[in-house]
Amino acid sequence: FSYLVENQSEPVFVLIGDVIAYINEVGIRFFGKGNRYDIIGKSPLEFIESESRENMEKIFSRTRTEAFIHPVEESLKIRGREAIDIEISFVPVIYEGIAGFQYSIRDISLSKKSQQETALRLREIEIVNSVLKAAASGFSLSEILEKILDETVERCGFQSGMIYLKNSD
Image (cartoon, rainbow, N blue to C red):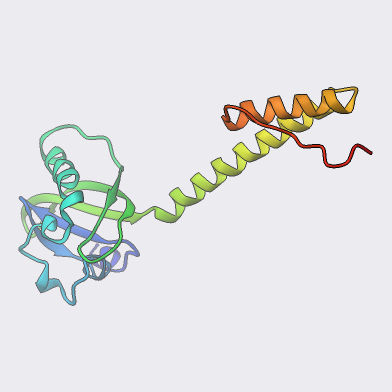
């Protein structure tokens, strides 16, 4: 068990009460410390910037007091680092004979960014398709341009628009 946890590619730590009783090597680097003794015996909240602290405190508190659906996604800012999107999972454990919770943190920043980019590209494709459909349904140039303009204005959420015909040929 300890070999698996220690060699995880994600930060893993055990909380007993409000303090860290165990943390793997990846967790040590995640919290920006040089060794586990700078972390063990302290609250994980000590390593989190104030703007993230309240939400993380709620997560830690809720895991101990109620049925909780996880994994939980949260934006987290570790001291001295930029905010990242994380997914935090937990499981009750007995660590050295004492009941606690094991937490695993996964950085999902790249995944979330990729999802946002995919949604943006899909929206752009939908707009292009609707404009092409509008263009295919007209008979004269002025009718086609009017339909394209109407569709573009509507799909892009503009209040108005204008088409300038540079060359009438």
